[in-house]
Length: 260
Ligand SMILES: [Zn+2]
Figure 1 (cartoon, helix red, strand yellow):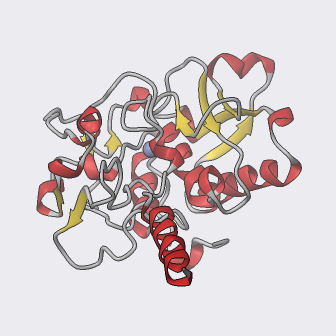
Figure 2 (tube, rainbow, N blue to C red):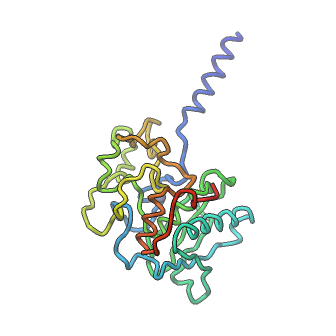
Figure 3 (cartoon, rainbow, N blue to C red):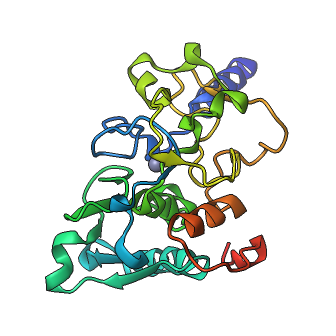
C-alpha cells in the first residue's frame, strides 16, 4: 500500500511542477500579452518622435489607494532606476497634465501597458498586486511596463530576430501566434545600433505563450542564459533608451544599474 501512496504523491508533485509558469505579463487578452493599444507588429524602439515623451519628461499618477506603501515604494524604485540610468525624468502630473499622464494602477489582471510611447492622451499601466519580487512586482517587470510607456516593444519581434532566436511555432498556442509575428518592415522602429539583446528586460522567457510547456523561443547564439530576466536593465536597454531620448553621453556601465 505504501508504495502506491508514494507513487500518487510523486505523480501529483510532478503534475504540479510540470504546470507551466504563468507569467503575469502574458495574460491573454492583450496584443503581445501586455500591450493593450493598437498593434504595432514589430520592432524594439519607436523612432517617430511624436511617440517620445517631450523633453524626456513622463508625467505620471500613481493611484495611491491601489497600493500598499511597500508596493508604492517599489514603483518609485523602478522609476528611480530608469532615471538614474538615463535623462528621463518622471514627474507627478498636476491636474493640468493629467490628460497626457500615465496612470499607474492596480485594478485589473496581470501587468500591462495601454500604449507604446507617448500619445498625448491618458495612458495606463496596470500592476496586479504580487508580493514584492514576484509577478508584476519583480523590479524588472515594473521597469518593463515603463519601457513600453517610453516607446519600446518586445525584443523577440525585432526584424532581425530570426538570426538570434528560433520561434517554435508548433509549441505556441495558436491564438497567440500574433504575438510572435515580426513582418512589419516599416522603418519607424530601430535598435539604435545596439543589435539583438537576449538580456533585455523586453525579451520574453523561452516558454512564453507555450501550449505544452515546451520552448517557444530558442536562442541560436551564445549569451542567452538570462533570456527573459526581470532583474535589471541590460546595458543595451540603457543605451537604447539614452539614444531614443538623445540623452547626453553618460557612462552607462552595468555597475550604474544598481538596486538589483
Ligand atoms: Zn511587455
